Length: 189
Image 1 (cartoon, rainbow, N blue to C red):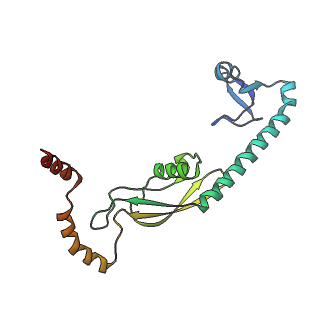
Image 2 (cartoon, rainbow, N blue to C red; image 1 turned 90 degrees about the vertical axis):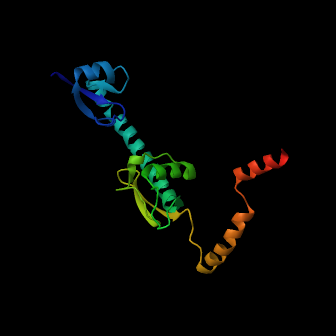
Image 3 (tube, rainbow, N blue to C red; image 1 turned 90 degrees about the horizontal axis):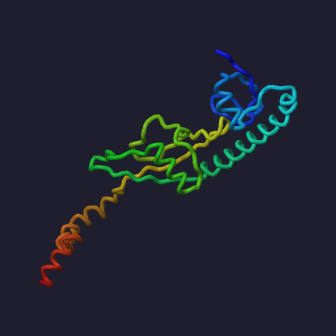
């Protein structure tokens, strides 16, 4: 297989970053990298331009790291509360997944992060406080602390027994929404 040497002008995942000299197949170089301006052929003039490309790469990496550190501080300060439907025994019917965490960060903080950067071994199904690691950059990680609560908040014992007695009377007084509509129609007819 014939290979050719190229100097990359931008970051290409799986291949390299700016100013890297890489060996690729000629067809890949001829059909994709060179026409799209993502690489230059290795020539004496191009080798002199490597310093400018290395400076561009250092600036990009520093900017990405600063943005990741700032986002990490914002994530560290944020406190989220997720609510899950639970049964009588306290078992959750749903779970908090990496997608849920990603959507909440996007809505609350306005930051787009990939859900694969959220380190979550399994979906969270139990209530309480949880801590999740988020890999924002290869040097920067953030700790997100959030609370998972039940949708049916437990009440104190005195209010629970008192409300149980009055709850039956209230159910008889207030019919459901749809039942109320049907009763109103019957009355108007």
